Length: 304
Image (cartoon, rainbow, N blue to C red; front, side):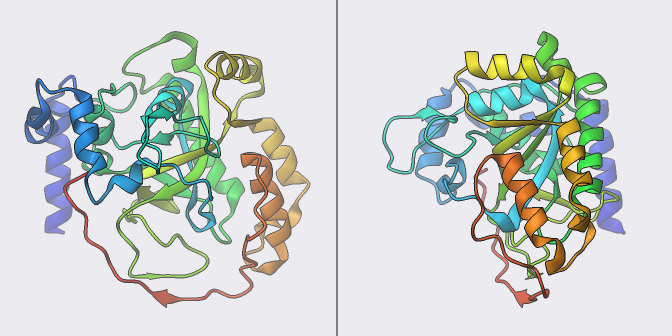
């Protein structure tokens, strides 16, 4: 209870004292350390850190950590255009090149350190969002339709109620991102029906998991925005699968077994996820029985 009250006071203080970085506390503790220094210096620092692997989008999708995130198209575009360091340590390349989907949604703190701008969100940055991206999980046997409705609500809010920097239509276009999370923190106990890394905030949002990165594997938008989204992606030379909210609902209606937690709904769940991400998932598990196992809880470092 004491910890909860402390965090509530922290968040209230942030919201009453906004800054260009979203938080005076964040600005004092983290940004000042890099003031006057090039973003390339921070990237060089990160490349040599033990957390450098977080900045590379793996070719293989982590089925265990699939999740949805509601935002606006401008945020997704900025994330996909961020430059990431390839695993061979060579020259940087755009996030959409050579990887499945391409790009990553980043925590507020990491985005700002890389020279990005906080373009959506509340008047202050929540403590959770400084280090992690909040998502709703679609791993295991969770009801993907219910999870999607939650992500869709956040997408609407990010496009209409929480825009900090308005870049026109892209800022006003709701987008649901589907991807797989990456994190340094493993869950102490988890099963085949739950993620194996991330942070469980214990909030009122069912299935919420916060990751240090969310690899972008696919986008969902309203049917009325589809032509616009596809045209912008083409102009930006970004290669990512796009589906519509309406086609998602049609897919769900055609797959009545999706509501089953066990093996019955596995083929239909896999088919739906393959369509949303545009790639085959041949190793998708059947989830016939929950396999509980213990993990080693890793510690967070200072880098993010």
